[in-house]
Image 1 (tube, helix red, strand yellow):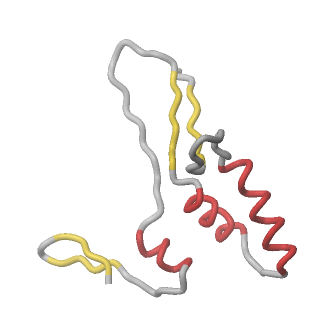
Image 2: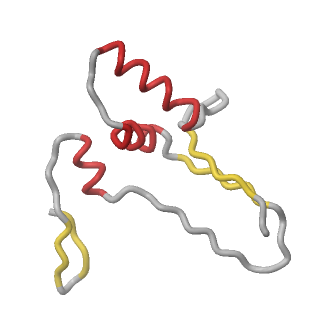
Length: 97
């Protein structure tokens, strides 16, 4: 079994980045203080947007490996900003509308 860690971090020049795990309770506290109602999935999406850098650390292997990461789709990101969007499949490929 391969041991490794994957973390999402904020972009902060000249400072140690804040991890997504550290950022999530900060966002939650700010939203609660402002009286903003939210659900956990929204909090998770906000943390993903604010922590765009992914760092992967894995033990060294002699052979090839496959890493699968799930990222939010563009329509999910747009919905955070109040834009309703759908993915339309055309003959030329995928596009957002």
